[in-house]
Length: 58
Image (cartoon, rainbow, N blue to C red; front, side):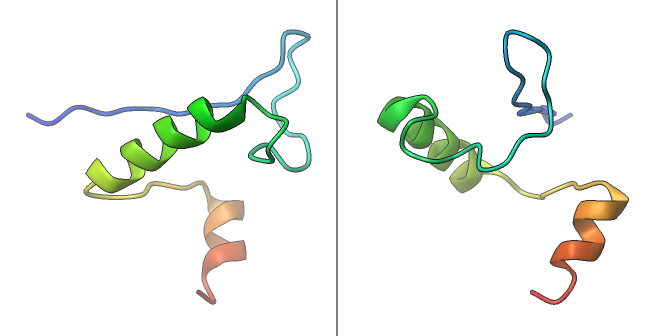
């Protein structure tokens, strides 16, 4: 059985959906490096319906 890893961004005050999460000011290079490593090891990429529809053209 494989691991399921969920990456979710949430602020201290509970905001989940907010603009550009992965800019340089959002956690710095450590966060970006961790996300890069997770993406390299991933076998699949699961999205919700809205994200899927937005990314369908890619």
